[in-house]
Image (cartoon, rainbow, N blue to C red; front, side, top):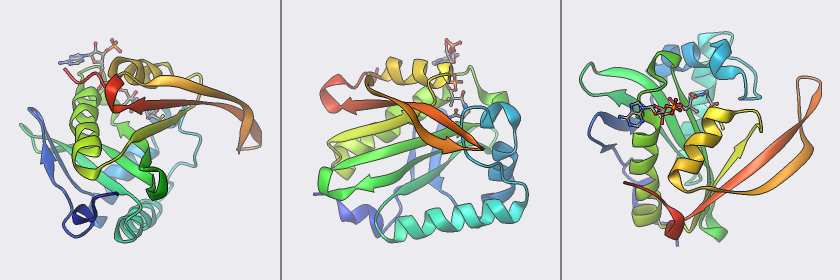
Length: 188
Ligand SMILES: CC(C)(COP(=O)(O)OP(=O)(O)OC[C@H]1O[C@@H](n2cnc3c(N)ncnc32)[C@H](O)[C@@H]1OP(=O)(O)O)[C@@H](O)C(=O)NCCC(=O)NCCS
């Protein structure tokens, strides 16, 4: 069973360099800056947030998902400068299967420093050990090499390739589905 205690009090967590706290509406300008950035959005296959209100709506939707017990959305804060650098979510929890799908972004100036690997080690450990997930899924644009490299580093395996299964912006796009079981998780 998914551990419902974390849907009463949001789990704030930390790692060596980072704090993972609940996303709040006042994070909207940071979320907007990420979700309008061309490099970030290149393989996200979702619409950019053209206004801060778009980001507020996005955050509200994620808070509602959390309240229903179907997802958790963390802001990633770099400790030494207290800066918002990105986000990580279990944005879709399939309770009956003890499975969740992850989503993650970093502001481009924080790429190449191991921050997302550090985030995923901490929050995936939490997912298996505390939330009681059995498996974790990531759905990736096949051309998103940095995301796939990160998933491989953590032990995710490619389990599926779907041809033209996703319609976005007038095109049918391919998807790769990666999955992680606890036995395969590389967290050192
Ligand atoms: C996906 C994404 C988060 C990956 O970011 P990233 O910076 O490559 O990943 P990490 O933060 O784990 O950093 C790993 C890199 O930092 C380097 N690094 C530097 N210092 C490090 C440290 N102390 N520890 C670990 N890695 C370190 C690694 O060598 C690696 O670089 P490399 O890929 O050139 O070998 C980022 O590209 C992104 O936000 N993309 C846009 C959004 C997106 O596509 N999200 C995923 C949708 S499926």
